Length: 302
Image (cartoon, rainbow, N blue to C red; front, side, top):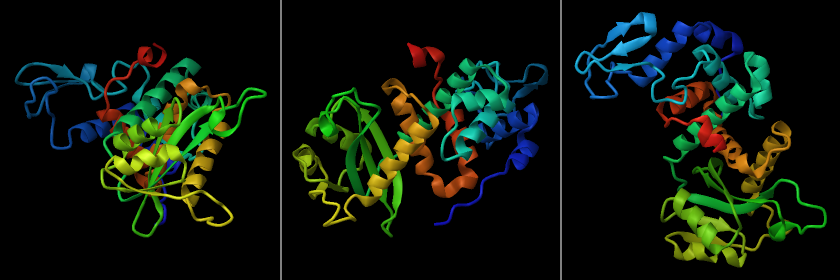
């Protein structure tokens, strides 16, 4: 499936270069069939209080803005900059760091960092609604720098991550899930599968004993000892995805600590699973931001 071209920056600026253009687009996205009062649920044309950019319900008099209840709620940053941040984060598969957002948007680094994490949290919440199904490859890997003299592989002090990737009918990678875990053992792998994969799916993994629980957890388990020389196709695509995830993390987010690794993996997974809809990516991320729960700076650092 060929990727469809996304909006150019010039096209984006023509559509969303003004605050009113952004408000109108967000209004249509949140209430495509007409205003719905977030308090009483009444469906009716509201009073439009243009001076304060508010809409007042004709039934209960509740006032709402297009950003109320979204990740942009109560933000002092203009919508034009929010929209541009979303566009930039979806445009480049290598990712967009807070430092780049700071430079491109002309805002403080702290503001750019908070905005980017709010957008990633919206991506995470959106993907939580979907499960992997059909044929699914499962494997684990390790991220970060190990201490001098520490072990490699499963005894390392690096951060462990479990990956799952599903395939379409032609055997091509389709959707991705990634989860930071404390350790890689049978219970952790079983919990990952139950949280992210539909029951009855066929799971392929390597032959390590820690994966044995997958066969008794409502899945069809097909373990196979990994041997690149004898069977180079086994888990091939999942290993490519993991390598790309590591390049994404190391190439864009230098010095990333384990505390926020999950949020960057959420971003990588969101974009990977929608890589064939590049022309829709801006609206898909914006929709996620408009429908996710409020996520504050305290949630980030608390």
